[in-house]
Length: 240
Picture 1 (cartoon, helix red, strand yellow):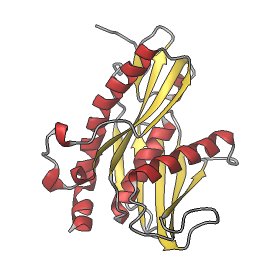
Picture 2 (cartoon, one colour):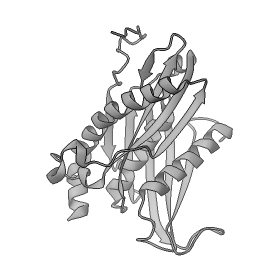
Picture 3 (spheres, helix red, strand yellow):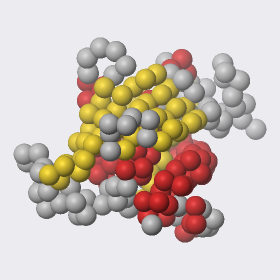
Picture 4 (tube, one colour):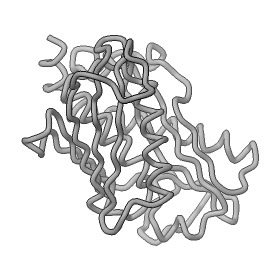
């Protein structure tokens, strides 16, 4: 059996404690505070407001993503996060429901202790659910790291990320209906499977990659279950 000693005492598949607070920002149309350990992101949704940005299809809704670092100016890494988030959210949102509108998703980094992008994706998805934006399915993100000894660990911290050989940020789809409490008991095989987004960095073998996907998928179901329980009441009132 694989043994990997982690500084915080977790086993390789163990996630940090996570929490989600719905609508902490009263001026936003919908918002969520998502925390995984000491990594904390606030996601605020504004819109949909009339009109799309120049160059975007007016027959569909437009998703705008704005990333705000904890300190300093936005850099190359943050721009990449914005693009990845935009593409991910575009793939899960039903863009034909509100044509010729723009919905803005603003991410404020409150704390960063690793797995920042997955945390931001989870926060964004929770905020969109709370505002009632029509989604094809719920997206759940998880970070997987490959250590130099070949071990795969989940939900990496900043200190661990500095020692990784490679990592994958994976986003899995789950049925949109699974957010509501009435559907919470649906069987796993009824959920949509596959990958929405896959970002890899560093040297990763095919075996390592598929190991990350297998581990990540198992972890995503735990996060999804937590998200369903946390957002269930708000989601059911939206769906009603």
